[in-house]
Picture (cartoon, rainbow, N blue to C red):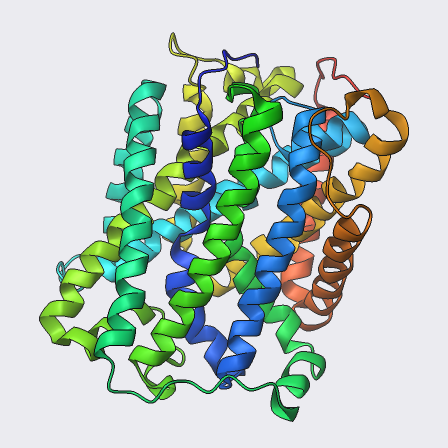
Length: 435
């Protein structure tokens, strides 16, 4: 799919930030506290997640400048390894990279919105939100771009307000941040630290968002690295502050095992009425996140459609260049997952599949450096090859313990990959460029 370059660096950066600041940071902490009660361990989880995201963003910026088309991992893997790998990357991105996170964000909105719509089931609220966003992003790109920029700015302001309120209004003791034997044991012990990174990786999903629309960004050689790097660094800092603020606002026993950690923290800070207001604010930030994924995800789905004649309708665009069939398809998949409503299983599955996909993309930087030196212009990954090696080693560690401790998730993930291979083998293909 060819598109006119019409997106500014601010829209690209807004997409990165809004893709990342979603339901993960407002839902993960309660589940992480089931495994670990040490505040330092919790912040280490989010720090490691930030390192993974930053290393990935540094490499993706070079890949996207060298191969500046829409599709993200699908574009990268198709060019670097061959069309089958590219198709599988798009297949995984469509299901696990976008449709599943959109469904989870909409469900989180439904759960938070129950505070002010107690009689309405979360799945109904989630369905309504998804329907509105689908209509919005199947229309004019100018409208959706402006909405994204303003919604993202509001998102950041709300996060900063929660952080400031926690420090100013809390009656709880400050969480102790000390590297001790407990923290070392948490990290190196049973493998639960690695598996809990699935939650963190889900929260950081979106650090590569601008790469999915690389073909539509003005001056990608300059603007794409800025969008990826600034967006990732800003969100990492916000995540660390926000998780510390949650643990400062409410006692660990109140947060442990609960999905609505933002509501609980606000209840301790402002009381019931204040918590309801904060729930509305959090819902707004989550709508921004779901919006950004509904904006960028269909670009990948459209590229998947361009690969196979049987799916070519997915690549069809309206007069504004929007792949509207792809928008409707992604939303239909998200709607199905909303009604399945299995939060933890879906997050583990997303973590497993996206770790494999992004690892292959990052490993591709070695191919680019060896076989495409003429493509490397304007931006190079700093501290190469250390940065991609760090990314690959940490992801290998996560995948290993994911397979060991979540075998059912692994089987479902492999099933999705095999189904993608079967579809590819049985379908008539279009020509795809490779190295």
